[in-house]
Length: 229
Image (cartoon, one colour):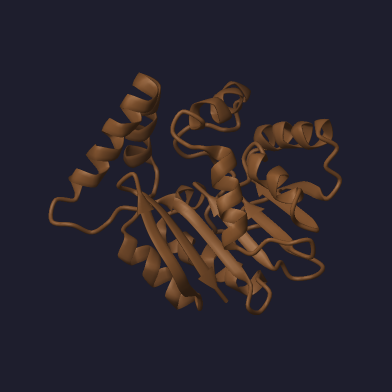
C-alpha cells in the first residue's frame, strides 16, 4: 500500500546507528534485570523444547538468544540492520544454531512454516502510531497458532486524574538509575514516540481477538500483558 507506515524509518533514538546499538544493552541494564526478565517472560509463555517463538523488535538479540536455550526454534525480527548485526554476532559467538534473525517489523514480516506457538515483543510497539499498532496486533493474532500466547511489554500510560504524574515519576526514576542519559532518553520517548493509554492498548488487544490473561504495570508506566489466542 502506498499509504502504509514506513516502519523502517527510525523514531526517537536512531537504532540504525552503530553507536546507539553499542550502548543499548548497557543503558537498559541500568534499569532492567535482563536475565530475570527473560526467564520470567519464557515462563509466562510456557516456553519448552517444542516451542516455536517469534520475537518482534528483537533489538540486539539478548532475549531471542536466551529463548533459544529453551525453545525448539526462535525467530527474531527487527527493522534495524545495525541491531540485527549485533544479534547475529552474539548468536554466532554462542553457537546458537536454533535462532535466526530477519530484517522485518510488525507490518512487513511474513511468516512461513508452522505457526508460532508464542510471540513476544518488548519496547517496540510504541514505535507505531495507534492505528498501525492496531494493525500490528491483528497481524500478530493472525500469525499465532490457535491457543498460542502473546506477551507484550511496553511503555503504556495508565489513565488517572493527573496524566503527567506517572510519566514524570518514571522520568525521575530513570534519572536516578542512569543519570542524564536515561532521563533524556525517557523525556525523548514521551516527546517523540507513540506510547498510548492502557485502555487504548487493552481495547486494541481485545478487538484483535486476544484474551488478556494477566496485566501488570511496574515503574509507573512499564506494562506487561500476557494474552492468549
